Length: 307
Ligand code: G1P
Image (cartoon, rainbow, N blue to C red):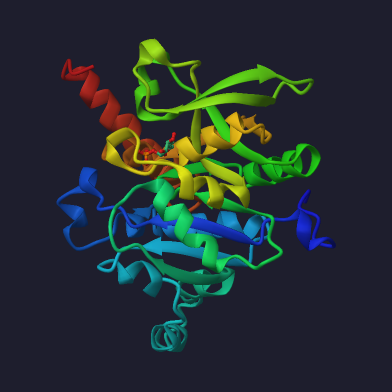
């Protein structure tokens, strides 16, 4: 791994996970179940994020929660009674699944009392970082990226070029209004671009490119100071994008790694369903039968003239 474990200043120790949203696009499911606990096959999105954070070498997961979303933190508890019951019944595989989240890393709850935006949420994590932590990771749980090594590449770029590094994907220009959009310049590495501007959810006609932020950030600690200086932006919220733009304007290095793997958006049913199909097909347990069923569902759909 590129995360240099021998030098603590060169690897991500804390990953911040903003998870205080109301899950509006998932109502009515999210009346009682936090969006981050909805499963991809059988594993909640928040556990997939914890796994990715642990894979990059982080040992702290700062979860930004809302006061009514305690169940997200509960998912990381030990559940000794459940483990004992499962083991006494010989259900070892299920027992391992229950224990997994608790064993990955140390989750720390940070409460966000009001939904003031992603920038506000990330700013709250400052208290969790150690004094000598010069940079940290942010993983948005709506975005599931694979392979799990995406942030490792970003950390390698940070260690080489300094500053902050974000993950980027290309989307059709007409979709840019959903994302933070980058204005970039080429570097000698095809997959690394220098960011010269960033704008949150622009009108597609004004988008500086079709390269957008996809939920993975390696941020220099200077972001906290920038977050204190921004004012409400798009949607009346404090936007992380605006703080990054401020750092760029002040000459701080910001780069993107262009993602070469897959990405799913768990934030709405239209992205959540394909994520389940993709992970389901790759599952040893469910994949073969799912493949057969999907082919039949699609054939019936086409026969009905729906396609
Ligand atoms: C957030 C960010 C946006 C980014 C997106 C990635 O928006 O503000 O810059 O491109 O996540 O998923 P949200 O989807 O939370 O509205």
